[in-house]
Amino acid sequence: MPETADIARLFDKRPRQWGSPADPIAWNAVRDRVCAAAPPATATEFAVLLRDEFALVAGVELDDPDAIPELSFVVEGASAAVHLPTWRTILLPLLTTRARQLYGEIPTERP
Image (cartoon, rainbow, N blue to C red; front, top):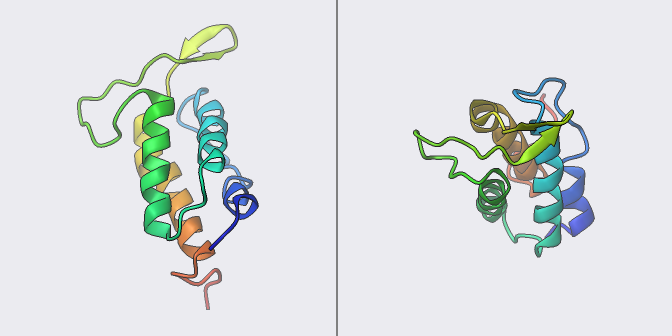
């Protein structure tokens, strides 16, 4: 089972593009919350923890199609919210794939 430092490294390589100025702040907040929890035993448990912590950080359930994230971050003096489509289609799948690699469910390199 990975240790907290291994889990933290999943967040080290940050995406080049974000959907909202609030996304990098949320990325850090999700990382901090995930790393504060006991390391999950499986990649599936990691994915559940990741989604749960994201929901707490963003103030919205990711699967709710009518969800409007809270303006819970201050970016350059203005309130901002995460960009849900980016989290749904890029950021959470990226972290989940990295976790699957860490847990040995998929190879880390392509042939």
